[in-house]
Amino acid sequence: MTAAQDRLPRLLALVPYFIARPGIRIDEAAADFGVTVKQLRKDLELLWMCGLPGYGPGDLIDISFDEDTVTVTFDAGMRRPLRLTGAEATALLVALRALVDTPGVADADAIRRALAKIEAAAGQAEPAGVAVGLGVREGAATAEVRETVQSALRDKRALRMSYYTAAKDEVTQRVVDPMRAMIVEGRGYLEAWCRRAEAVRLFRLDRIDDVTVLDEPSVPPPHARPTDLTGGFFQPEPNQRTARLVLEQDARWVSEYYPVDDVEELPGNRQRVVMRYADESWMTRMLLGLGGDVRVEEPEALAAALRARAADAVRRIDSLG
Amino acid sequence: MNLVLCLLSTRQYLSAERIRGIVPGYADAPSDEAFFRTFERDKTELRELGIPLEVGRNSMFDTVDGYRIARRDYELGEIDLEPDEAAAVALAVRLWDSPELTGAAHGALLKLRAAGVDVHQSPHAIVEPKVRTTEPAFAPLLAAVEASQAVTFDYRRPSGPEARTRTLEPWGVVSWRGRWYVVGQDRDRGAPRCFRLSRIVGDVGKVGKPGQVRRPDGVNLMAFVASFDSEQRPGQPVRLWVAEGRAAGVRRRATVVGAQEIDGAKGDVVELDLAYPDSAAKWLAGYGPDVVVLAPDVLRKAVRERLLAVAEEAR
Image 1 (cartoon, helix red, strand yellow):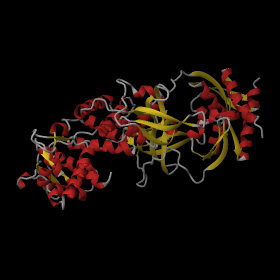
Image 2 (image 1 turned 180 degrees about the vertical axis):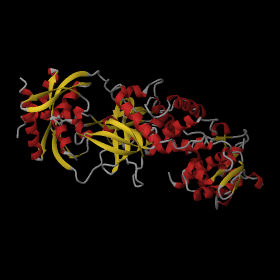
Image 3 (image 1 turned 60 degrees about the vertical axis):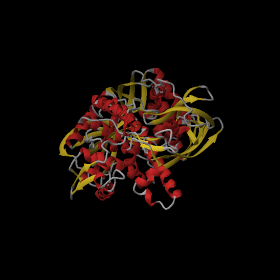
Image 4 (image 1 turned 45 degrees about the vertical axis):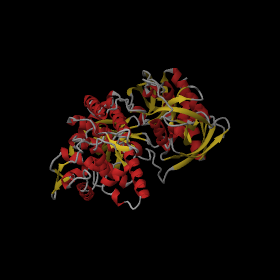
C-alpha cells in the first residue's frame, strides 16, 4: 500500500478513536496508529476541514487540541469505525484460533472470549479459507523449561543453563539475558543475549537442560537486536564449507530441507547437489545416518573420513558377536 | 474523506452531479471528464477499503443511478474487550510474519482501537508464536481462495524431478507446523487433494472466472492437512553403549546404567526410550563408532546396515 492509500483508513478511524478517548495525549495516539506525532497533527488539520457538505462551519468535524492532548467535540456523524474487511477479520480470527491450543501463550479462556466478541462484532462467524495449526508438541521436561524461561522473562532475570548444541554435539554451560520466547515451525525458542558467545542467540527449548533463574537482572546490551527470521533459520555464512553429494531417491528430502545449490537431476530420480554446511561434526553425523542413500563426491577428505568412521563402527558392532 | 461523510449522512441516493456540487474538492474539477475520472477512482478506493457503497435510484422518475453508504453495513458492531482478551488480540496480531496477513491484522487492530478497545503491546513473559509466508505461491493462492477461483500450477513430487501441471479448485490455505499447504478439489484426480506450497514450481495461473469455486459445507481444512502428519508412536526401551565422553546428544536423553569395554574402548551402558524406530536408526548411525546398539537386535541390524553401506562404498 502506498502512503496515500494508508491515509484514508487512518482518517476514518481517527474520529471514532478520539471520540472514545477525550483528552488523550497526542503522542500516545500517534503510537497507537503507528505514525509520528507530526503526521498525526497533519491528519488532524485535514480532518478539521472535513464535514457534512452543504452546511455551515458548525457541521464540520470539531477538534480541539493543545500542545499535548486532543479532543473531538463534534463527529459529523462518524461515531463508529468502519467494519472489518474479510481479509482483516480472517487475519485476526485465524491467528486467535491458532493460539487457543498452544501452551504458554495466553489464557485459552481469554482467547475464546476474545474470539467470540470479535466474531460477533465483525459479523463473520467462519473466516474463509485460511487455517493455521502451530502443532506444538511439548514434552513434560520442555514444559518445565518453558515455565522457568517465562518466569525469568516476567521478572527480567538472567538464566544459567546447560545447552545442547546439535551442530557440535556438545553441551555447554551458559549465562544468558532473556529477550523473548517464540514458537516457530512448531518449536519453542528462547531468544537471549548469550554472555558466552557475546551475541544474540536462539535457543531451542527442547535442547535446554538444568535451567536456573539467577538473582541478577537480565541486561541485554542496547545493541542486541531481535533475530530477523524472514530468510529462515539457515543463514548463509561466508565461511561455510561445501560438499558435492549424490542423493538417492530416498534422500531427496535433503535438498528440500537444507540449503543446497546447483541441483542437477540424474537418472533414477537421483540428484546431484552442492550442500553448504558450517560444522564438520554435524555434517558427518547427518551423512553417516543417511547410510547408502547418499554418496559424497567432493571433498575426498570428507568421503574418506566417513568410510573410516563407518568401518570402525561396523567392526565395533561385530565385536559383540 | 468528505465523500464518505457525505454519503454516510444521506439516506437518499445522491447522483454523481449532486455529489459534485456538495463535496468540497470535486467543485474544482476543470472539466466533466476530469470530475468523472476522479469520482470513479475514489469509488474504487472506497470499495477496496470495504466501504459498502450502494448504488440505486430513489424513485422510478430518477434518470441516473445515485450513491449512498448504508450506516448499518458501514459500522463495526459494538465491542468491548477485557484486558486479558485484549492481550490475546495483541498476541494474535503479532503472529503473522507475512506481507499479506500482517497488514490485514494491523488494519483490524486499528479499527478495534478506534472502537474504543485498548490493545497494548503484551508483556514479554508470553511465548510469541510466529507464522511466516515465504513461499512465492502464497499470495496468488490466498487471492484465489478469497476470489473463489480455480488455479493451475506445476507441482513437483517429492520422489522425482518431473513437475506435473495440476488444476485445483482451492478451498483454503493451511499452515501446519510452519509449512503451508493448499487444499481443494483436484480437477485432474476428481478428488480432494493437498499440496505443499514449497513444491509448487513457477507461477500460479488463474482458471475460469472468480466465484466459480464452492467449498463444501463443514469441510475441516486443518484436519485435511494434519492427517498427513504421522501419529506419534509410543517409545520403545533401547539399550546402548556410548563411548566415554562422546555423543553428548544421546547422553542428555539417556540414563547411565553401567560401564562396559567394547573392542578395547571404554564407555557407558545407557538406556532411553525412542519413539520412532526408523529415524532412531538414522540418528544413532550418525554417531558412528561412538554409539553401539546393545538392544533390541532389530535396531542394531538397522544401524549396522546403514554404516556398512558407507564403509563399503566404491571409491
